[in-house]
Image (tube, rainbow, N blue to C red; front, side):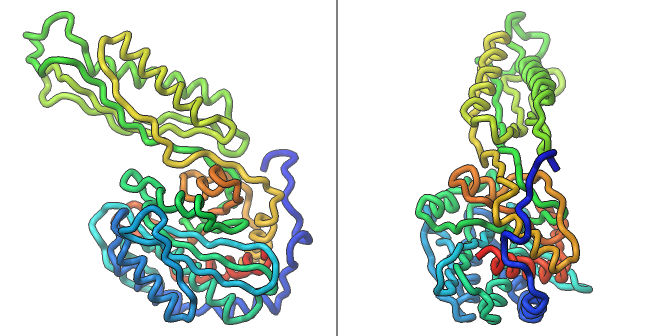
Length: 403
């Protein structure tokens, strides 16, 4: 924790009564939750193709007696799913938000063995979405929500590079938001109050002319591989500078190169070199300044090497930081402690998710917390059912404390 950081005291939110905790624990039904998760996982939904699973979620919620809205939100191929559960008395609104799309890997059907759910989206994040649905059921079934309301939202267009977050952005622009947000991504070992922004870098270094055998290459032919190497060197220099200005929790901004490709054969002078990687930055760094710095480096390398360099700087998610004294932090910690007997350390979110968008785009505090799941973005996604139950309990209690 940063020295001087203040966490909202538990007395600033509803103190958890053991009888309330016991009633929520009893209301969260393991078998019902698992059935929901399996029924979501069994519907393939790669990003931009989430219509069928959104329909399935809407069907499950309607069968439970909830009124379901289906806003198009910029993506008519898969209208979003929205449920509002209101206590009927003034208070805060907490939002449970999840994405229904999965990365573009071969589909793996659901399976349950020894209390572990596997399959496409089990950990990222249909299991988490099922836990939010069960939390909403528990809140409704117990009648414990004394004030405010719960807003459940689910959508497509999350996973990059296939999606561009347009559906969530549209919902934010349309005001389909709460006063604070919980997102059940697979992060469970910390309470993330800060996270870096992300741009995926796709760079094309090229020259005029055709590929040519090395021995017939004119002496003034621009060397696209050397230019690419120079670009990587400049990025390494930038990393050194960024490391001098770290955030006390999130660390420094970074440039990372994960792919470098050129040429068709060992003795050919190619016309093109492609480089791919990421640029991550901190909340105090304007995206425009980060993009300008990136473009300047590309221009200088292109000029110095006689090559052409093409690349767009597209921010997938912006950086964010939330006030650790905000009420949602206290409500969450109180609820987490009621379920687990401990609190989570304050930390940084290692990846980007939709929580970045809530904070950076609308100033709505968002906490990413989900099951201790494994295998995200692989063919071996898996999550223990007890973890889904824990998340549902924590979410339901957080809603009661916050609202």
